[in-house]
Picture 1 (cartoon, helix red, strand yellow):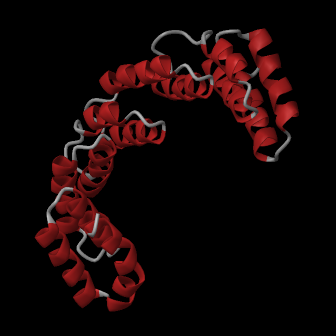
Picture 2 (picture 1 turned 60 degrees about the vertical axis):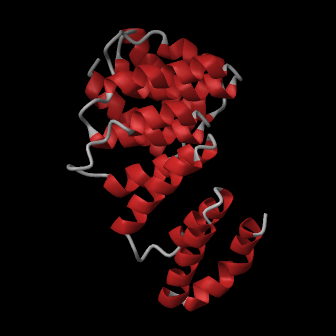
Length: 219
């Protein structure tokens, strides 16, 4: 069997929406080579899309250690989360944290996935690995700010939001978010200053969000 050509056929079937035909093709490949990691990964992805989370984990368990481990652990994390095995899901992110060192793109991808599953402390640890001298400086600060806010560390959240605003001062949606966080943290003057800056920069957007933000000011 020419595995490469069969993998291409299976991928095309999947792209065409012919899911079960694609799955059959992957099974044929795996019957010929049970250790074929591309076939195993793609079969797992199909099961995951179909919400067959236990079946997905069973397929992933056949992949040799070291092969496609980032993809494997991300899928495992999602499956465990959907099966309400939150400790196992978070454990996957802890493993991933050590696998992505030195690659900002992968660090951000894993950190964002961790946030989406609600593991904010783990996300902070992962996103903190981003080397902002290379890339992803805004993204690091913005998502760190959201994570800190989620765990109630408003001071750290405001600091990271401030770094994000300095990098993208025309991202008007940031101003009400940071102002509201300031108000929640008792920093009324700082919050008012941010809203006044927004008013000067984009009065139409200011009028749209001022009422919502004022709610946090008056708490």
